[in-house]
Length: 160
Image 1 (cartoon, rainbow, N blue to C red):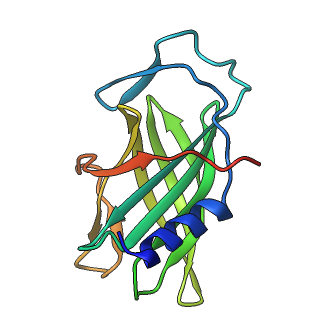
Image 2: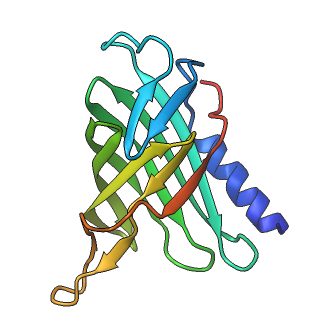
Image 3: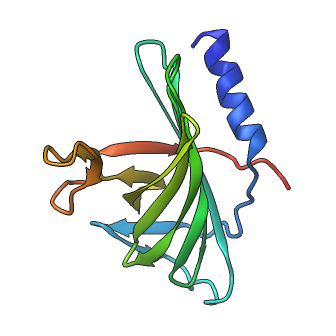
């Protein structure tokens, strides 16, 4: 990894903070998430942070911070490709059977836009359904028929 990649990851991680609310071990079955121990009380929030790097020198990064309370999911999602325009914004949506169906409201090139993104927690990693291009509209979309094939690694959330 080059210095720019390290700095990019450090800056991303430093800008956002979250703390794991629980250290419970989790089991994942298929696309559903269940707790090996007693589930958290429904009013307690769980926080997670994940990072994905890609490119020939791991120069492109995506960071997502999630807060899950009951069926409500909120957080921050930033996609920062090297030498291209970044997408930075927030996510809001629902969690059902371990699947997180979210609307990503982001800014890119000074313009605000929204996009549906779908994730699942699996084996302590975050999996995403990949984005496709709708040939009729030219916009990116998440297809329900896609599999969870884009993987994000867990990272420690910076302390508040």
